[in-house]
Length: 147
Image 1 (cartoon, helix red, strand yellow):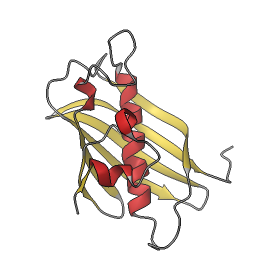
Image 2 (cartoon, rainbow, N blue to C red):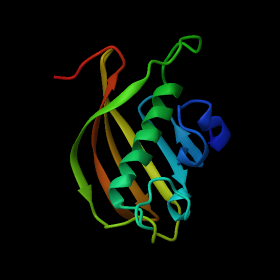
Image 3 (cartoon, rainbow, N blue to C red):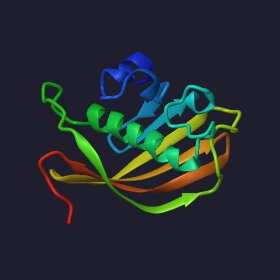
């Protein structure tokens, strides 16, 4: 099932320029693949001094994880519980900035572990076949705490 930007915005708390993803290409219970082109926008809200640092790719991945969490929550009548980025591990930044990447970004996230209190994802951001950044994220579910 593919989703467009408006459908994505209905699933996550981000909207307008802060909604960074353009499309969900595919997803299943454990994976999601999204596409984005907002890294090229001069009006990207994450830009600083006209540059979009590669570390901002973590926000792209976090939004993909949020969409995945909303899509894979199980009970369609259940209200999704907000998640918060609690930790990033093994972050590997292979480029210094994203704004000079000409092709669209492909954001991939794989759910490694799911618990009532947290989610663990492995993620990467690519451009064509070039790996731009990757890492592991722990998402704390509202009302829980990560020690």
